[in-house]
Length: 486
RNA sequence: GCCUCGGUAGCUCAGCGGUAGAGCAGGUGACUCUUAAUCACUUGGUCCAAGGUUCAAAUCCUUGCCGGGGCACCA
Image 1 (cartoon, helix red, strand yellow):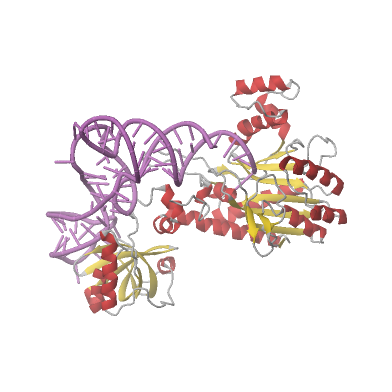
Image 2 (cartoon, chains in turn orange, purple; image 1 turned 45 degrees about the vertical axis):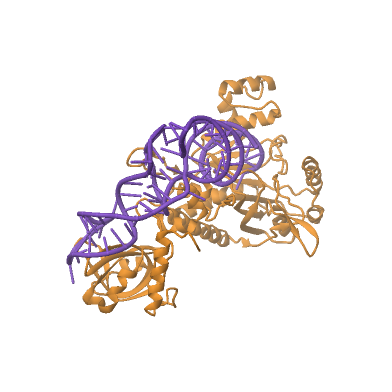
């Protein structure tokens, strides 16, 4: 490695110094430690502890040193002095911030009140050959934060917080469904026909079979096959892949929960979604007021009001919401008049939109985007959701809901269409538009008989955004997709 | 794909035609309760890349690359 910066060269040189002293810079195990948090939470004067972590700061005086080590539970101050460590005190001069160390010692409280380990033994565990970013300023370059998430995690408490919360949220969602009697299943992510949603798929290639396969855009058609097979409550939490644009709210691969419940309908599913989100928020966040944030101290970032998840969440028909936003006469005026009104309301509509899409623009811009607290939008027009079951009283709408929180759709729910003839007709229309093959096997399954059922999807990434207050989907995905750098 | 903003030291940033800078980190020295340790001295650069304008370009222009935000597509 030529042209190495001075900082890296120094660390490499130090590594050789260690080797010269018989220290393995990428050494063996250091078992039996407790976490930084445990050490502090179970504090007792002079209790013996054994800890390990990454060195993140040090304050050296000639004959004693204060330093902090860090693990995923937090920081812990360690203290070394000549009389306590003897020969090993000299090791401090050879440590760089970023190195991993392990130590043994006893707990005490400094005169400024911080619980600290007074080291009686010190082991060097791993050399860090690259300098880590400033503890004080952190990593501001968003590109580097996503590209080198491991560095972000070292220096950013907020990054660790959000990603640990994600882990707990997924765990609690899974537990909720299991406790309600749902069985977790895994269905194909590589499919010969990508169905179950309207989205462009990724194509991949199976060499030995000599065929193209698609990364799934939804697990829906396989989960419904399981209802045909006799299961009554199934769910899956896994990745979907959609070959669409990337944005603050969209990553090409994203985590979706889908659940199907035989003999239920969309209203039961709405209640299920409300229950799971409230349960998870309460267990993981400890509150139903989530995602709020105070203004930054210098005032450069405005405060964000929390979202209030207190139930019951309102259920409102789509058309009522549109009328409230765009005028009670919205559905009685002519399509041309609707376009004129859009201009007055400040909603842009491109000329090639169908009339129902014009209405939907109004819905998205004036209702969805402005809704903060949870709102179930029900009875959507059938043109918008062609694969759902029609309402028995009003066949122009379908028995579905869309749950909106914080201006974005978090969860759709359906009374699932189980009529194989109707399903074939609609899939054929859709397949024609998108030049897709028909999933004949799925249709055959429906012909065997699928019980009436409710289904839901919950966008897990967006749920985590809502609960943690993250503003970008990239903040809740450990390694979001970025273009490779030259 | 379109619009817009950005890319300068390991990190955070300033400089915006006239010798490439600061704070932190790093190095050397001092200091036995520090915590953004302190004090003194000090090292460090393909200013994203390639062209162009100019006596002179980090700075102005063009193109490209990567990223943020917005729009479109979508969940």
